[in-house]
Image 1 (tube, rainbow, N blue to C red):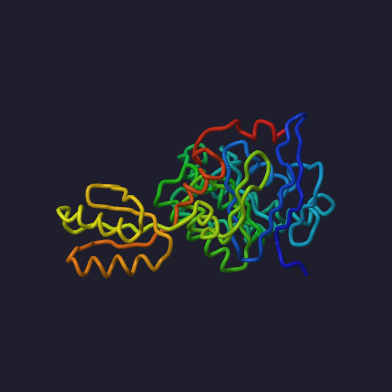
Image 2: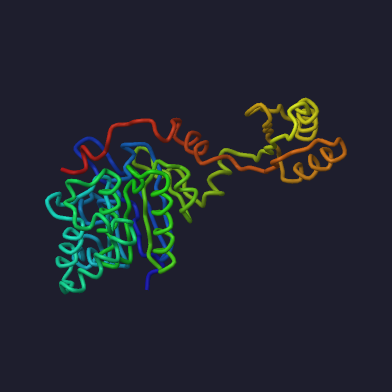
Length: 324
């Protein structure tokens, strides 16, 4: 019995002279979330399409639940759910009709497919729109319906390609809750995202892909260590104490202090012990703070350090090559 529900080793995919994947390894345990980060064109969608049995590959191995995605593709498809970057819905059918159709294609009895569809529509906040044609849905509603469709078959593995695109912050939080519920039931989730806070909030592990290669892998705290160091961030109660606070921070850390806002100061430190010394000196000097935190670098900083570009910087879209 495999320890991983998703296993890819040495995946290579070429489109003519272009190498979309160049030896990619990905593994996800039951009940875990792997976030795959990378700029557009890095190979993220190509990897998902291979694992979802939609695209062939040139070298390497890919298994879902121990089953080969090429030789046992029919069995693999019974185990997975997929929500791609673009909704794949029948616009002439209602929301209910789309989900019931998928259920019937998965050999559910009509009554069972209807019950499953109703439950998913409620779960994704679409009950009021259940009888409306999808053509009348907003972009966010279509996205939620597409995500619901990926769960009709009670999959053991779910692939989510940019799942939060088109969702407002409130609906994004609802999606995150659903993903956490899935993993609590033992479902493995592989998601691609360019929302760094999404990866930080959901992922047990993160793989960063650039130019078809995995250039970093680890837990969110592991990756944040790549940038190096920690920082003390304080927000003063009284801005008139800024100079005194900055002097203490600089004296303890030996580093220059950054003024992030009018009353917020940030300074790099070598260890968490510096935080206790700063607190002691602030108390002795009577410096009041409303916030006092020891921070690791953000995933945005990690992404920039690894790839040399912000997470949202546009690159050629791999989809234009990978759908052929």
